[in-house]
Length: 402
Image (cartoon, rainbow, N blue to C red):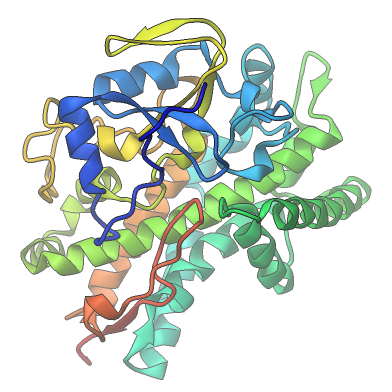
């Protein structure tokens, strides 16, 4: 795509981290398919309406794999040369998804519910014992998902901090971070290689072992695919859930009447979580970048083969053509066709796990920390920037004693 004067820079800045940038509504209304420049200097087409975003996410003429080619536009340096399912096209994507689907079978994920609930309760018990104020990021939002993922993979808990440091770097899109990202990926690959070799010698009962053994008509994951899947799971399963929980809590604390309603009627928590996912600005859809492999017309605009397209999931999730009162918080909203877990063949494999963790975390918070509220003015929260999943650095909270 040739340079064009006056093309805006993306991501857009915002004064409110849990609400979408003002540009999203303007673009949906006036220019639903528009040009922008991403931090690498590459130009992309931004797509903002729900119908168009769904189409880009599901149309195989918009390739995920093409972003891994040398010199291709990308937001996250990790994409280069990756064999992750996250950046594959059919037929390889279909093959890999078939092989790993058993590891994410609904029954297998549901079997984790009691363990996740016990872990959540234990983490909050530590916070309660120490007494308010407490940091909800360090006390719950970080340790819960990273511990769950590490247990699923069979990773020793003492290595969690190192995993966290590597994935923090790997999911940065800030300028100048490319070498750091690739170095972190190499370090994580080295660790996972050793872990896989150890499990082959001493079989275990965990998700990584399931992936090692996954086979279909003699087909198996090769080592590179196992490695890519391991760090994809760590990045998405940890960072997305940590940020999602932080956004959910801040959103609920802004609407105390909804918080009180959920406390009185916990049966609403599943639909409330769907609404919190719809409204969340945690991910921004930055990982959804695609490249057209042939000319395609979207929203009346022709996107030429080779051009990059970024379907803005968070913009689509506020489309008034699909969601009544799109900026409100309706904890009983049904139906709720949000796109927070994607759409089409790349719909998030871990969606059920993410939903379950958020439901348990929100429900346990309301049960065990009555009167939950921020310990500082919201304006004092420091939000991360230049990363795929934004969140406050800390989230200090208070609650009533029992």
